[in-house]
Amino acid sequence: MTDKPNVEHNAWRNTVLTLLAAIAGGALFYWLDTPLPWTLGALAFTIIGATTHGHTYMPTQVRLIATPVFGVMIGSAFSGDITGQLGAWLLIVPGLLAFMASAIIVGMFYYQTVLQVDRNTAFCAALPGGLSEVILIAPNMGADTRTVVVSQVTRVVLLVFTIPFAFRLFDNNLTEQAVSLAVHTANWSLYGYGILLVCAIAGSVLGKWLRLPLALLTGPMLLSALAHGFGVTDAVLPDPVLAAVQITIGVFAGCRFAGVRLAEVKRTLLASIGWSCLLMIVTVLIALLGQWLTGVDLRELILALAPGGVQEMTLIALLLGADVAFVSALHILRITLIAGLVLPLYQGIVQQDKQQKD
Image (cartoon, rainbow, N blue to C red; front, side, top):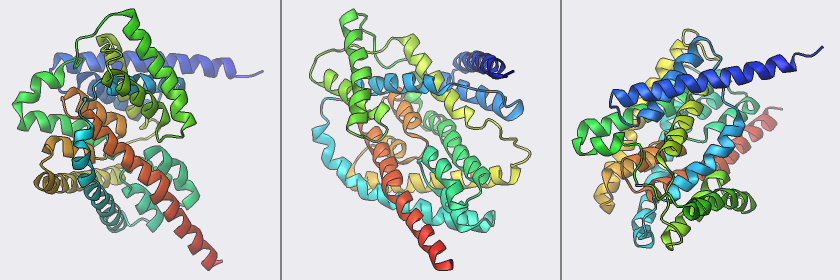
């Protein structure tokens, strides 16, 4: 006898219930006229389910479909004058590096002081990005996985929630654009949708072949940006698809809390909230300096630097009418540096320390 059918049945049941709850949350937040209602509503309701009954679930296959679609959506919003902005982008890179270094150094000191955890746990908890990679690598470093998961997920969720509301609070002109379902009027031609489908599929294959960072996102985004930039199509995804993508992003972010009981990690959660607030202050300070040096819009600098997740921050930029290309490029660069440089270097240090002790 095998319990595989029951497991599959439970997975389908949990998926359907999670989606229904997420849609209900999005609809409620839309009715309440909040920023990013479909994402934040889905996120809020998913977190409630994840931290109470723990049965929230979304198959990874959904992410494999939603990520290329999101990449196409981002690419359709790229402006045509990207080359004219490259100079300002390059000037921001030192600020990004300064932000990453400050976050890691201050964050490690914070977690070692406040939670009194070991150095490796403090490093993994403070790292400003690369959530999936950090969670996978943390056990091999001997870090406390639960502390790392709670810290990393809390950072993403808190920033995703606070930034849209903060922007609305300080700039009333963003209200209508922030709560709108889409940023473009859809072109309903079959030809246009066919081009978008090609961008999603071919972009995913191309991204993996070129070994691009976040291949399923960056490949379709690149092809979509080229197709729109060269006038091959002006089609954009219809409103229901945009809403579905936003809900999916909220669900996947919320599902990261599955299995976490807030009462059991209260101290870690409070410390992580405190660190996320400090991190946001550092983000704003570096963004203000960057605005003074380059003249780039402060809102776009905050979105580009805030380590709230590539998809989440890019979605906020898209729905707030910010420069999507700039925001996504800085986030992809940050994740690439963390996954390709910072983590390997620190792992090397850990291995060297082990060898010296042995």
